Length: 286
Image (cartoon, rainbow, N blue to C red):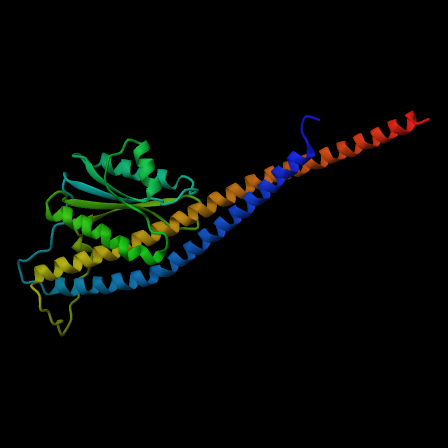
């Protein structure tokens, strides 16, 4: 026989071990996604508090003092793209980088690309995209605020040196749909128009100049937006990994079924061969 039963049994054992690894990876991804989703309510509450403070500050601006314009400049644009840190996430990075390409087409003078996620950095290099800054994606949601701080520090350093005049962020969103949704939104210039002015009978006590207060509140809100984006992207990455593991498990089960069927056929052939050998030996006996 060209194929031995022992070889097939070894392959069956290997495929069963692979199936166990896939199941474990799927379970880890599901747990991480649930943990990330559980943190979003806290981030939203924090952002709502900052939004209310911005509304108060806008309502008590001196006449003639307008907030920063939200018009997008045509040059010195920066794109923050949140990609995957680890593999086995299907087309996660490709979908995010497709959105990056579309955004770059809308910026006449080109854009400065900032990539978060080592796998995304590799995918960007394969596309020939020039990356000016990069960082690792979080390994768990507890690292989200630290990563958001790193991004904020880099952005405001570049804004302070006039290396960058506008910033957009691109990241995937978690969802039950199998289709990955990618969000592209502008962070800078800060859009104050989305915050309703809060008219109060008793105005809040303010110890900072209105322009400084609004600038600091805007920076704090951008930090909240970045925290939310990191957590959403982390959850979406793990959901993509879950879907990839489901597809992989289906393939493994098909392969295992084929190998088990082959092992049964080979075992039957071995039994038949042994019976024939015994019969032949008995017929040749004196």
